[in-house]
Image (cartoon, rainbow, N blue to C red; front, side, top):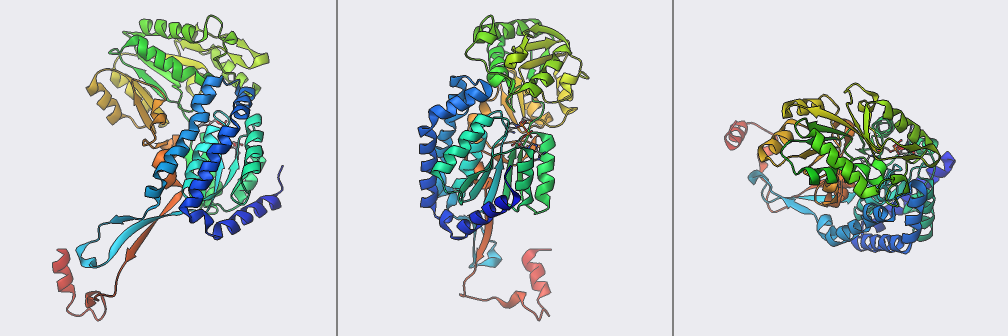
Length: 459
Ligand code: NAD
């Protein structure tokens, strides 16, 4: 474990570097973002191997969901000059001849704490925003995805000065040591429970926090759908990375009219994706560790298994599983599942489905499958969630201009694309006056001036 003194020295070192002003230079930021991309591409194989060791992540999934984060670097480089430019806003007539502008400025030293499920992407993606916005960063990867954590530490040490970007490896204690220091923003991705700990530690320094948390993401399937396509998109979103995805459909609410056909279709998709025995499929990940394996295995008793259900404790394997006849009070419906188990609950009408969603904390995502535009608008109007995908799952994360984040228990603040730049910037409001004229109306003595003020402002 790193000593507190070492942590304090690291933060001091970064403060000294930040105060040189180098990171404020846009060309410095572009140079470092370019170096970040180059470093990632040079270490592609090592990254894929680390993900394989941590989660048995299929190479295809690692490419698409982790390595493709480099596209966010291209996006940031393409837009950074525009993002960093001061933006003029209108000034009221009485302020003539002043001009008003918003200057984005770096926050300073930021801490990024990440989870184990997409251990590479969820560290690099916020970092891109932090660097584009001109900050120094301390990164704390998850100790649970150990291979990726070691690799991140190694590649940053070799390619970046620790006074600019430093990786501090370790578990809860290390995280808590870091939290004792004062940062200018903390960006945390992880569970709701730990999010509360992060926020209360940050409050001691009045450090702003971004909390990217989890929760139970509902997936509602109306009767008016293309059954086969809906089933395929849901099975994909649920079982990619063996269900260990913050925006995976957590539970299924399905219109009872189509339930049987729909579940048959889901079973067919699982078979198509992973064959008769998913344990042998090269395209199916494993549960991260025994603790999570045991937690998930306990859910298998919470209803009638209609697909999957097989486990192999030696290999942290849980088959893609669908459970029918699940009670809303069952343990599997009380916490975020975060694994390859899909409980199914049938509903009679949309009102019932919406009220099941609204009885629970606001989720990170909500999926609604339905062709009817009025029903789509109704779900959008009557529910609240971090984001929504209509007739698909997970794909909203791939749109750079859609800010990604939670609401209520699923988090606060959002990122991706420009939102990443904004969250790591302070929007400094600047009013520029000139010496051209000086209307004396606002100065004392006030005698005789109030009536004029009343006339000007009309109140
Ligand atoms: P976690 O909250 O257990 O850990 C996340 C990070 O916090 C790790 O780096 C860990 O070392 C640190 N940490 C853990 N306990 C701590 C404590 N007491 N004090 C200080 N730091 C502590 O989360 P996890 O198990 O790694 O990840 C799973 C959770 O993350 C799920 O809830 C999932 O939905 C959520 N998640 C959210 C997103 C998102 O973008 N919103 C993405 C991925 C995962």
